[in-house]
Image 1 (cartoon, rainbow, N blue to C red):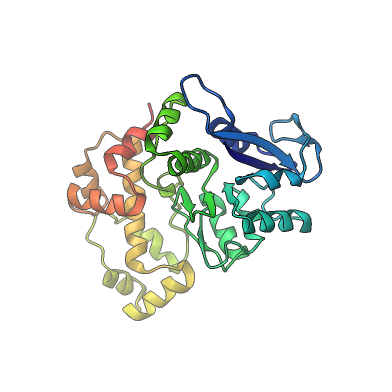
Image 2 (cartoon, helix red, strand yellow):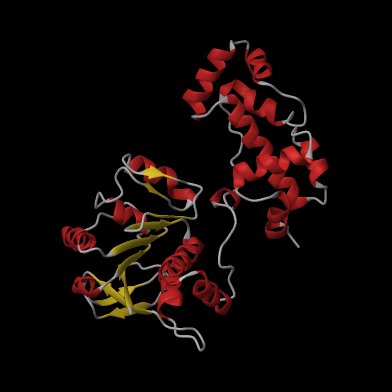
Length: 311
């Protein structure tokens, strides 16, 4: 039996912990049980949760000694430092070959050990920039639902914890077993795409002397980088430098992101065909929109509409 130990702390998110318990700790008729699941905390006793009740945790960090996987199901507030005891326990477990896994904000605890330095990791899109700023040695992948290096694995927002846990089951015991478990949980064995499709499109902003607002009203036209430069009365090189300094991107990449953002809005809120939406956002054809949309969001316009269209 593979032993999974979840490290909890006050105030513990019940959903993130529940994701791990559902996949690794819940027994189901007709589904082989390959895991044992346990919970530990640095100071055993009552642990407050985000749902307003306490859980009683009797095991301390010594539970790591018998673990095959140690899982950190969230770590809020994200700026909370890990104690020297927890850091030592995590590093010793990793040295023994224990797999270290985080769900959502749990990555902030793991990053403090240094085990993610020079490696890729993911996090809920709303905190990805904070992770990048606080831990510049970590290569943050803000669109990934999860990143698995074998010895360490991280997931995006809370729901992506289920994606990661099912992925680990698939790695440990094969696709058929993971699919059987997912059916019992009434979940897809895999989700298409990444986090971008779930993050709300960012507003155009008010940088660059009104250029962004001007461009936002003209997405259906054949705008070019030269048009941007002409509107501002600067050279294309100066325009590129100002975009990089103020927005951290290029004019062309910004324009494409705004076109995809408007396409998402139209897919969610209108009955327009994909062809009509492509024309509305300046991407000319359905073929071009589908290609660009998948590149940006990891899914297709049709699949996106089925998931996010209001009733």
